[in-house]
Amino acid sequence: MQTIYADGIANMSLIDGVIRIDLINITQVDKEKTNVAQVGTIAMSVPALLRTHDQLSKMINKMVDDGILTKNDPTTAAN
Image 1 (tube, rainbow, N blue to C red):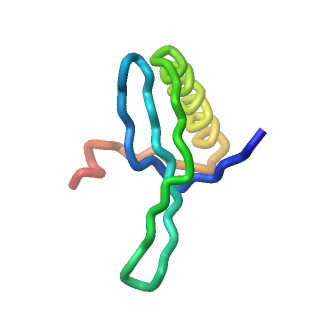
Image 2 (cartoon, rainbow, N blue to C red):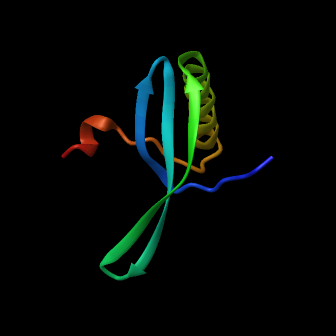
């Protein structure tokens, strides 16, 4: 099995019932310029995306409970 590290997502699309998520890495060339390189694509069904969302939500809640993350109030974050 291959492990891919990704800094984030560049694009998400839904085509014929398949969600495609492009994974990217960001590298800083100098103080004012960064490079973004696509490192892979995840393709999954809609039910798989919903299960993934559930698993990610549980992980985030666990990190909040463990004190690793704090949740911001979205009504105050926009100001």
